[in-house]
Amino acid sequence: MTIYKDVLETINMLERENLDIRTTTLGISLLDCFDRDHKKASKAVYERITSLAENLVATADSVADDYGIEIVNKRISVTPIALAGADNTEDWMLYAKAMDDAAKAVGVDIIGGFSALVHKGATAAEEAFIEAVPYALAETDNMCSSINLGTTKSGINMDAVMKMGGLIKKTARLTKDNASFGCAKFVAFANAVEDNPFMAGAFHGVGEPDAVINVGVSGPGVVKTAISDMEGASLDEVAEVIKQTAFKITRAGQLIGREVSSRLDIPFGILDLSLAPTPAVGDSVAEILEVMGLQRCGAHGSTAALAMLTDAVKKGGIMASGHVGGLSGAFIPVSEDERMIRSVQEGCLTFDKLEAMTSVCSVGLDMIAIPGDTSEETISAIIADEAAIGVINNKTTAVRIIPVYGKTAGEIVDWGGLFGSAPIMEVNSFDSGRFIARGGRIPAPVHSFKN
Image (cartoon, rainbow, N blue to C red; front, top):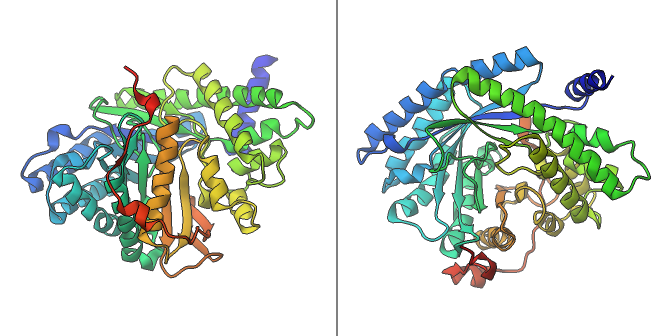
């Protein structure tokens, strides 16, 4: 009877509750492709990606068909490209186009790793890389970029943070004909991880093997359904059910990940069990918080509810797999969660409340549209705040923010597909310029001194 019940639960998860494998991401090392001849190196990058990933999409589709579990996205992450050491935009564009062309050739949805790690300082090549990022985002279709600006061990590189506002504003301007969509492909990180399968921030860390399969599982609808009939239950009882549900979701993801890994003959890496919403009705992290008892996501108590959800998901996942990694927890991207969009439109979920909630979620300020005339300094200050939350709390935080060219607070922008639509959120209008202009580094917190 127990086995029969488990089978029925799994069928319900698949058919009614939007359980899916959000992404199967192939991580690829490019370290031995890099060369001072950047035309030669970018060609080697293209060849390495296409040779290793040529069967990724077909294999993932075959596994999905065999097991009846949809794999929504097939993705690739590569070694942070800034390690290639180019010194001008023209050469960096060779790598951007090689990545984008390779992604198209093998049929994946997105490729990540046009990235740099500058948390303690930037080389001359990395400075040139930062200058090239807006052009790379504007002139490619499927390529994503990220820059790590701080870690708990190193503090925050405020010189680099200062440049992020200009980078994002230039990207918004260069892609203004597409609602500044280029900014949706860029993430500014603190404490970035090497094995994250989710975009736009995925890259293949230097501590990773030549190639690896990482899997990202989702399923907010499953969790919401599991607790929807628990009216009157205590919060510890709710947490226990979330933990049990996360266990089942993780087991399904591990099965699929290992099967894809086996068929491709590429090692299985990690399972990221983050609850990642989509614009589809019923596939919302915000709705889980509302089922817990909040009238709207953003009401007082939202941070506590999200903290409990994130912790319970992690506990359930750790029980189910010895290879949980990535960012595991709960994402709160505004444009990709229909209940969050509603909360913003109704005035319940504000920018400041979102920032508070990022202290306990998986990542940070994700897919947030802001007025196109927001200053570079304000954007850099937003990134500094989020980096501080990550560095002080020893967690990964990130900012994926889109100043939509020509749009003002209260308007709606629609990117379609998985990226969804978003209301333009109002940001604080008071100036942060003098603070950001100081530059330098914010030192590592006292609790980082452990060895």
